[in-house]
Length: 475
Image 1 (cartoon, helix red, strand yellow):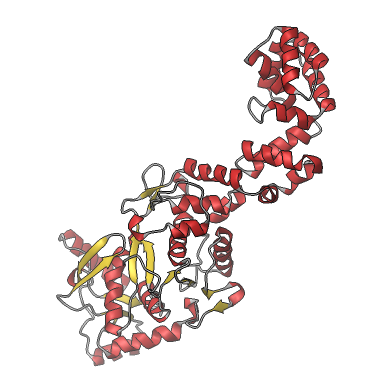
Image 2 (cartoon, rainbow, N blue to C red):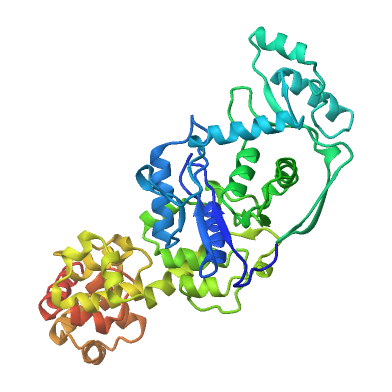
């Protein structure tokens, strides 16, 4: 699959199953497909909800909300509340059974599919025997040549067959993958495979290739774990005379420990990241570079990321999740987004504490000293809360400074921190950490934080004096 140019009709797709919240791997797949299509073609959303037991309306609505939050609009496909946009629908697989049945019958008529009555127990025994003999597990062809009479007899007995695709003997499937390069698979190593389960449910690989063809998908990026599904899907498409998209199988994401990404080693859903207070721009900037190389290391808009997205810049090796890098992009977002976005990002509780006159100054405090709204809330309470809470370590440090230190500090109290600190230095002889740490702890309760010159202005003289007096009482 080559990089498209402006004259090439281009349609990418994201086809999730609504069986859970979108995690980072799903989100990156959606992002890459959206970036490839942005400004070049159409990005389609198809809901693959054939797993009726696990698929829910809530998860479907959640994945759409996550895509919208990330700033990844789709131009065709399923919409909230059962709606859709486009002419190739329905865009929910649960509504496409009639379409699939037509193609199943076409394969049967072509003798490219046949009913299989083998039980799971029979198949498990066969696989075990093949593995013990050092052979790759594949279907032995037990039902491949049943007579019409045998089929009818089994059906009359109430047996419910699966439907298997008849793989051509001795064939070779070759294709050029957009990331992994030339691929070659022997059909005999694959064996006849199920395209419709015994319960009537359609298999992923069958529905997926049918829908891609009928919806005009030209480019399909998905995880490399689907690479071995591709020869099966190409054989299905060839048998039915359908076109298949160009495939690009992107590397998987490993956790910080090198094992597949999971909750155990750092994975979070997009919903969790949103609730923590990550900016969507930060998540997108991080994910766009997770397995894809950008020469431009600046914080980029989605349009800029799309302009720089190149298939040849996708890596073959597994990408490694790094939470510190995600936090880096969060900090970049904090420093670059407009004041109104930062204010809206703060919690309602935080906004209620900040006086209108101090709003702009506090936004600056939040930019420089917080990564998440909960951290900004701490500084709102420090600066505008009624009382300052000191832990035992802070109290011990104040006691070490001594009562005389705070007598001098009270006498010199000022909102001009430079002049204030200089006066305390002259009066007490304290300097360096012995001067600044007791003052910081007395006024904020924290060893680190915003510049003291900004803190004293925001606190005001009355609060400064009250807190210095409270610190003196600790001694």
